[in-house]
Amino acid sequence: MESVPLTKNKKDPKHEIGYFERLPTHVRDLRNTPPDLFEDVSFTDWSSLSWDEVNRPYKVDKWAEGKKKWEEEHGERMGVKEGWKHFNKSFHQLFIKDVPEEKEQTRSAIWNRLMKLDIHGAGEAIEELVQLLVWNKVHRVEDAIWDPRGKRALFEGLDVEKPEVLFLGAADGYEAMQLLAQYPGGHAVLVDYDEFCKTDRFGKFPAQYPFLGNNPATGNQKVYYKEDMNIDFVVDDIRNLKYGKEFDIVVSIGLIEHFPDEYKHEAFDMHRQFLKPGGYAILTTPRNQLRSKAFYTVMSDYMNYGYRELMDIHQMGLYAWEHGFEILRAGYIKAHNGLICKVR
Image (cartoon, rainbow, N blue to C red; front, side, top):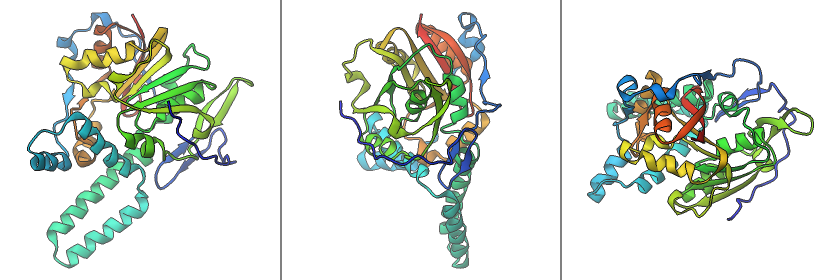
């Protein structure tokens, strides 16, 4: 395995417990007071649920224009790997936007095009402004993409020390870094079959982003950065991995909803096959809620390059139960459902 080289960065003295800052591109949140924005439904009797009761997930079917154009040009359906490559580059463009500046530029463009009676151009600029406003609300106001407070609450209380973590479909690796902050001294392997995730999404993740975690030496909380963590990035198809049952935690964030029902067993098997006996599988999926449906509609050109479902936590939990997992914790965070499981 090849480790991604990390550039050393001086710690920011502002980053103390309770710190909060909204930057043009993202939020830094080290608050540790309620609410943690995690709604727990772990009391559910998963064995008693049925699909007639919970219904099937909502399928997102508004495709990205880039996907439709690619398929027209190539005369075939866009494959899964090709779709993920397009998605990763497209989605990454949102994370690197200076949103306040781009909003001002887009408003100016709308006015200029209207003055020139360029109605079509003005319409395109208005659509771009709407997308910026939605992204600003979701990522910079609600902080619902990374959601550090919700994910800290979801991940807390695991019986592990210096864990070996495997992240399937890792993208920017955010959740592995949060886990390594909460359970320091461990090691994470990030896996994604798109090289762009290694070089850009993870490789260019903000070095000064602070993760609130734990200090085993003092029993207090501590701030960590990407450079503090032992992480390897493997560019490969999950199905080609040669690991055995050697990981304390196998995590996926927004993975199983990309598998239609006839392939769901493969998604859950991918978690099971790498777990040590007694290890934890951590899974999240986007929530089936009105704001999520609106997000994937308005942001379709950035997001919708492949099969995608929106679930509620009971649908997600029933899938996990049917595929042989005991559910230890289940609940909602801002934009996602979350499960902590062990093999049953």
